[in-house]
Amino acid sequence: RKRRMRVVKPFLAFAAQWRDLENALQPSQQHDPPVIIDSALDPSKPNYSSSRPTLFRERHGWCPYSERAWLSLESCNVPYDTIRIDNTGPGRKPPYFRGGQTPQMRWPDGTTQGESMDLVEEVDARYGNGILYPESIKNDVINKARQFQNIFPSKSRPSSRAAFLFDWGGEPLWKSEFESVLSKTDDLLGSSGGPFFCGESFTAADIAWVPFLERYAAQLPCFHDGLNPRDAMAYPHLNKWYEAMETTVPAYACRVRGNPSSWRKVLTMAGYGNGGVPPAVGERMDDLGLEEGRVQTEEERCRDQGLWDEYRETRPYLAEAGGGFFGNRE
Image 1 (spheres, rainbow, N blue to C red):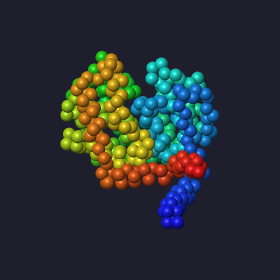
Image 2 (cartoon, rainbow, N blue to C red):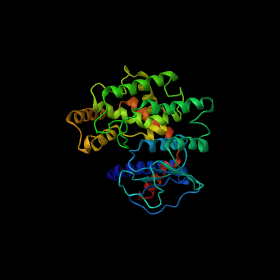
Image 3 (cartoon, rainbow, N blue to C red):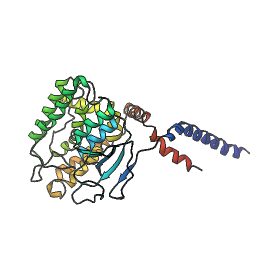
Image 4 (tube, rainbow, N blue to C red):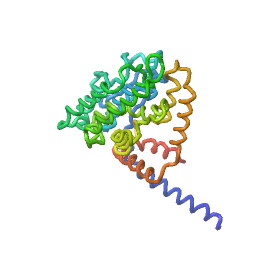
């Protein structure tokens, strides 16, 4: 009999935990989860929503311009569907895709629109109530977003995987060119009082810059010794901006932000004639990977958990997967 009690007690405790979790998830079952379609795997024409916009973005998450539109939807907490498009060279595109580059948006009324910052502005106008373009600083937001074009290197080779890194011959830009970009960006951030491009609030200006600065933080240290966008001594305002984006903007930190190791991995697929990377760059990539592989501190863990809690509280459909899990528990 004692042996049975040792089995029953854990089972009862386990069952109670199931009930607690199931009860906590029940309200979310009333919300439809977003539709996400990989068109390279499923080219059939989708049934478009008449109430939610549909974002066409690059399939692999490499395209920085797609990230702008994606982050605007997330920042405004817009329910939206996603169709992932393979726009890498001869990639297969579904017959219903109207052509052109990503991102594109199909609005609920059936109209379509492209150009990343035009989409950011339209998302804010339709759903954000000015959260990304606050009326009191709207001109400053627009001007700071446009400064990106003036500061980032104009003679670099276009690339969705390694933007603003290589010249037209496939070689990385000079260290001095990267340092100029970082210094000017740091000065621009300092002029606002920070930590964001337009002061204390996250705006569309940050959306314009973040896909590219995010990649620079992971990729630039691989090219030249002593080149680190997150160097607090060399670029104090830029370093604070990175910290603010990653610790105070849940939509970015929890959903849209890429993985640094992934951004470094694409260096093996772009530049140098797509024939790999030189040994020095490869060694730096390995060193950075080891550094980022450390175990989180308790403070970092609690901070990230708080960001996730804030993010999921406004997105009840995130528990939908849990509902399916409970349905199969027996």
